[in-house]
Length: 255
Ligand code: ZN
Ligand code: FE
Image (cartoon, rainbow, N blue to C red; front, side):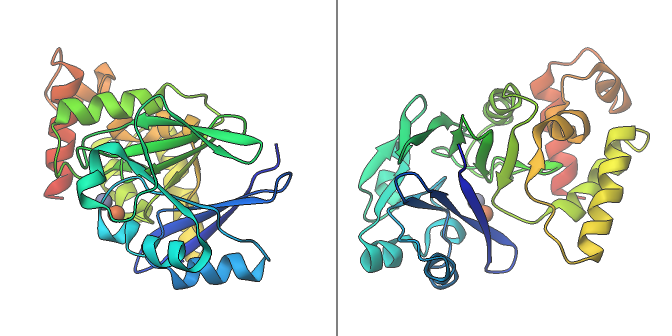
């Protein structure tokens, strides 16, 4: 399935996305934190946005949704748990639901931790994961409304997806995430290689997103909280993975 995915840089360091399904000529926008650039990117390609998929209620992900809906008639798809704090929701979704986009579809995962209602959208046939502020390249979202246990479980669920999954996350935070990851795990060859690639991409003013899930599994410390060597390095040998994850998150918060 040839789903066309267009990355739209918005605000300071957010990414919105346009997904175009050519067979039935359907287009979705993911996390439009502002409307203008997303509408313009669609218009340039002659696409009409039919649906807006939202991962969580933070303004930098949703602020353009209602304007896009007003302009195009698009249906807003949002987490059921966020119904009280996102306006104009047409379709409420939660884990296990599917969201159609023409002939293709996404599976919804509940991924609480950054926020209590956060969801991710996995386009199965296209190996594309829209992870919002749950999973970043070499990082993860801050714990604003959830516990470390919840976030570890959410990340573990995403980590179980196929290696070839491309991770389309909500922010370009990768360079600073790489500095933190290297401080924990300086001799991890996959991390060192990814950090070099990131430096080159940023130097060339290129996005580091999407990343490949196989690389995240090997290099992202937040996906490696159950790695005994990393736990030992943190002085937490034999601790539960969620406790190791909590310590990594704490260190990142004050890095
Ligand atoms: Zn957020
Ligand atoms: Fe965000």
